[in-house]
Figure 1: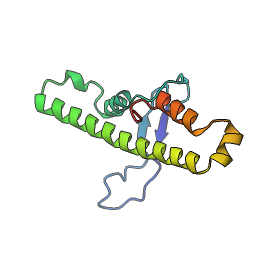
Figure 2: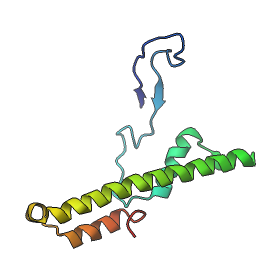
Figure 3: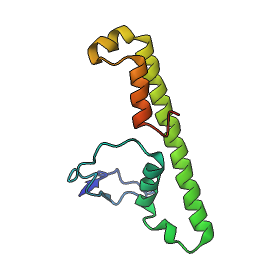
Figure 4: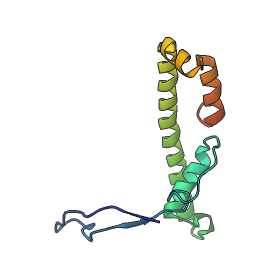
Length: 126
């Protein structure tokens, strides 16, 4: 499956003025295969993101290039971790401040919500 970036306005300095830009998607993201529910693993997610650009980076024979790619992967993981932590903390704060609103509707108290988040976001909440 392919998605297209769309047409761009052509300017003399715009290197992307070639029109449509195809972006290949794996079957998992193209909707052909459903992913099974599993806890978030930021290491695997960062690796999957890096492999979009460098599919066989571990086979690279140039040590500096391989180390650069590994550092980029670590940076991606760090950014993902910070963003998810922020969202999870916001969610927990919201549940705590509005327990009278959430608990009756979803039947989950703050402690149960924390336990569920710890289960599904192991890398984020220790």
